[in-house]
Image (cartoon, rainbow, N blue to C red; front, side):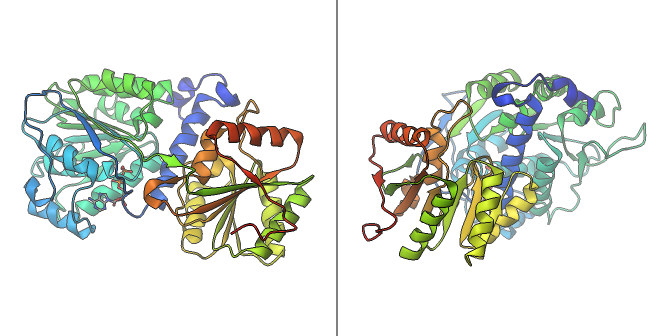
Length: 445
Ligand code: ADP
């Protein structure tokens, strides 16, 4: 493990996880979202814009032409299949491309076009005839940096004079070297070393500084400190941009420390509701009975695709085995899998190659599979203190207004304890969950 990261890791915190594990979870989730996302997330929510100078006119663009991009970049944008700016890009791009450059804090969920926006800003501000680093982008992990790098390469495919280098551990350069690439993307520790100790980069020549995935970044104190130290080396004239998928108070405090005089753009995620969902519960005595009930349900109704949630890896593995023995095509998503493997499993499921996806709570948090019509809680979601995890429940079975298709949720109850969890979930949402008799399934559908 890199030393700086070890220093950042504190004793086990909430949920028995160290700071470092917490960060890795968040980073893995963010990466997973990137890997499975093939297009923009749609939203009907309005963007909130807070301008640094409220008297200056607010520009927004409805087309990429209006931005007067370099022709090579416009070509790159179109080659990526973008027709018009995304909601957040409509406002963010004019701010980022303005003269003089403006600072920006932007927050919106994964998949709304933040990366594409700042990549376009970096590429626009580069002077390719200058052979030194001019744009600096820091990401929390190597894998996330790599994903951003890929976007730079795609968008810059008709602008080959612009070069990119990764400031990541393992990329060892000879001492005394001066980088010639115009864009540097990397993790905070290495970027700091390259600016300060090794002097591969002259921070005074940086024109655009991007801090991506701020919410993941601040999960470790070490990364927070390193990011701030990098920022302090940059000239006053440097444009500073910060992006985050979520906006807790802690992200906000960090953002204000690191981005002077910012404009702020926020796009809330669409609220999920249980209004279009039929919710049932089934009473059983053991996991074998739960499995039997599941088989009965499968025998009685046509299920296009279902997701089944279990509490532990062990149960998930067991259930996936039993289901495939019954002849179902089952995909299993499990904690020990690499992020890329998980993305591949979700992708296959999305494309209908498997009809059932069995997963543990942790694994599936934050993934959206819109076309799933049936969600089965083989185990109800509880938090580490044994209380109902209402948020997870809602996210699993809830739908956003936009994809407001009707859905079916079935909860398996196998003890007094799980029954009480169910009752509390019911109370929390003030929505009735009806009992289902799996020996007589006429009522369902
Ligand atoms: P974020 O950084 O907010 O997660 P991305 O920039 O990665 O979002 O964009 C999410 C997905 O949408 C990517 O597949 C990207 O190629 C695509 N995308 C981004 N901007 C546009 C656009 N203006 N039109 C169409 N697709 C876009």
